[in-house]
Amino acid sequence: MEYTEYMETLKEQIQNKRARSLVAEEIRGHIEEQAKEYQAEGMSKEDAEREAVRQMGDPMETGCALNRIHRPAFPWKLFVLAVLLKKKLPGSNVFKAIYFMPIAMATSIITAIFRIIMDPTNGALNQFLRAIHLNGFAVNWLGDPKIALVSVIIVNIFQWMGFSMITYYAGLMSLPDDVYEAAKIDGAGFWRTTFSVTLPMLKGTTNVLIILGIVGSLKTFDIVKLLTGGGPGRSTTVMNTYLYEKAFKDFNAGGAASIGVAILIIAMVMSFLQVKFGKED
Image (cartoon, rainbow, N blue to C red; front, side, top):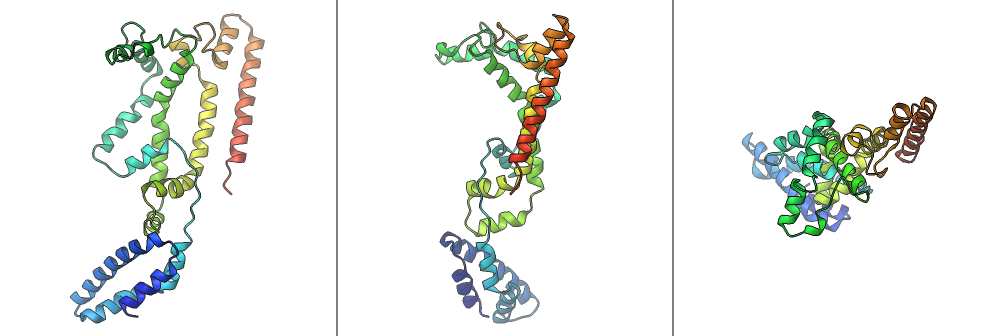
């Protein structure tokens, strides 16, 4: 089959119009490279092109295969950062080390840093807000019952977000390159590939992170205890700090044990539901 005939047959088989020009560009380059190698071995230009075309296989089968790319959408917020890091941008290795650093730090150090940053009078956060004339947002981050819990959540996210990113990054590195090459030929851009190819293939990783997040949130104790002690009032009290109070302040061992059992049951039920509804079809 001649090169021109091969390309026309292949284009006819591809239903996605956007992909046709990309297919022509990619395959033309591949055929030209192959033909040059055959010419270097002594073939004429015409014979080299015919041999390169023959090596490409049946154009009808190739076109049908490109049309069978699956495109389910399952958006998730955290892993876009891992996708960008996979691109091996300048400084990505340094950024990965910095981003992962909070996990290696003791919780006491992290909370001490954030208590200084969130200090209502001399804290860096309020100083910055005042400097840009947003005085209304300069509040008592750990002393206001309305926002204290939000502040604790922000610190918790800061500590563990690096773990989620690294887990996603490890999952991304295990994905086959063939799928991305097929998506590129099919005309998928960066965002379409991210949400229609990468995310569905990382569904198992996402489910694991959700389960770990559920269990981890129910285990939260040290960040709350060191940042706010459960206050002001009881605005940041969680089940584990309440268990601590029952056991070591009220000396109510039975009540503390009941709370511990309740935490275990909630974790098991929520994890079971996540596994059940997170199964792959």
